[in-house]
Image 1 (tube, rainbow, N blue to C red):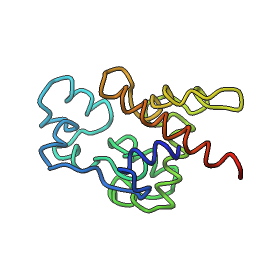
Image 2 (cartoon, rainbow, N blue to C red):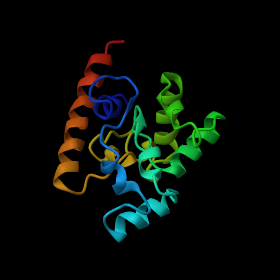
Image 3 (cartoon, rainbow, N blue to C red):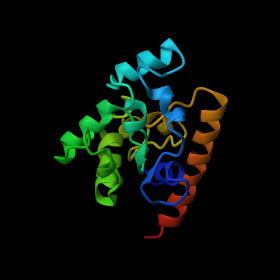
Image 4 (cartoon, rainbow, N blue to C red):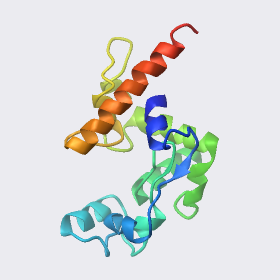
Length: 159
């Protein structure tokens, strides 16, 4: 989790808002996305109104994205993240979202226990909890996060 937070926050370990212009987030928009595949993905993830791509852009330690994830995280926290998505930037809430989402598979359907447990550690494929590893770009990110995880594990070993 810490290695993912390192990457997703731009190495700050602070909850952040995903960078990009409004037009950048059109790829998550059910109306403004440039391909039918992206428009369908937006709708499948609960973004149904024009502007939802920007409204439900990535925030927090794991870049919480999509209406459905804001709704689920809000239900878990007992807060209205749908109408107040910036609440996902609160450190305590961002931490709870990261832990809950990674443990339950909220983000992609993949759970932490599928990759990391007392009996196994597959830091590379654990990236599937947040994002894919299929293409060259995402595979490189997964390799970087794997390295961070091993380094963090080494630092924490003596505690």
